[in-house]
Image 1 (cartoon, rainbow, N blue to C red):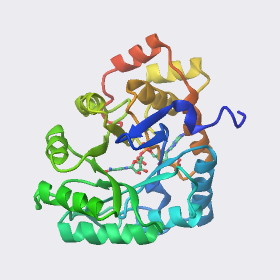
Image 2: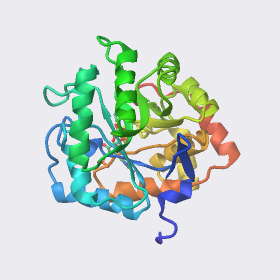
Image 3: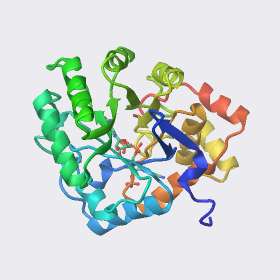
Image 4: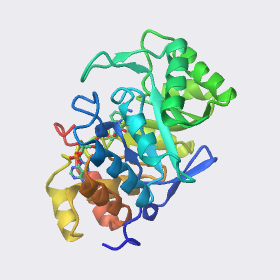
Length: 292
Ligand SMILES: NC(=O)c1ccc[n+]([C@@H]2O[C@H](COP(=O)([O-])OP(=O)(O)OC[C@H]3O[C@@H](n4cnc5c(N)ncnc54)[C@H](OP(=O)(O)O)[C@@H]3O)[C@@H](O)[C@H]2O)c1
């Protein structure tokens, strides 16, 4: 596939709050870290090369979080890409503590979020974070208090745009009374459509929807997906991404990978168009329980 055919721009663009526009295949930088989303990657040079290749392929939206590593994912992004090319949007998140590998404990208290934002600013080497996502509501902290803290940090110029992750419609509505919300990041894929109604809500309200786990960790599969993939000489994961892009114009998938080969396959899905009948047949496949 030549350079022109392999570009994240071929999937079209989505607006973030009417302020920034990004190409609709982004990159998720969680799996660049060590096992259990903990510590440095086994292949540091490989991880840096994947990030650089993503930008070469016109990916201009990178998703990360202070908790990935922790800190490691943000540090790798800065090491690979700083000074950042014009138009590159880095979206990070806060709201978790990491006591150890595969362990995540809530903390979306105002003091923790303030510290988290300061840490991300330093590691990403920026004066202002483009998009800051509340990683998950903290059951022990008032949701309004978490969002108000992010709104204050936005007023102080440390965050440009505020976003949410792992939320319900009620959360989004409560947050929007405090500050504009530009994107919502929930688990969603061809095989996992629990949050369908939120995709509709985001579309109606011009909020970008960022599906995490968009490939079911590379395991999306099934008879219909395989048949349609064969017809396009594509892989099932590429068809799963093409289905997401066709699902809604506000969809912004962020497939994650530590492999350049997989990255290129994922970006190539930006130019894969499914026929209306193919899209409908795929949409009619019931949720694939067990592929999460
Ligand atoms: N907001 C949240 O709570 C939350 C939670 C989880 C994730 N996220 C974000 O969402 C991003 C994506 O989610 P995810 O990483 O969990 O799931 P994913 O993108 O569905 O799957 C990533 C996995 O699939 C494999 N893969 C990627 N491309 C592939 C391809 N073309 N063919 C075969 N296998 C492929 C990768 O392995 P290889 O490395 O071997 O390619 C990796 O193990 C993360 O990076 C993170 O930024 C957010």
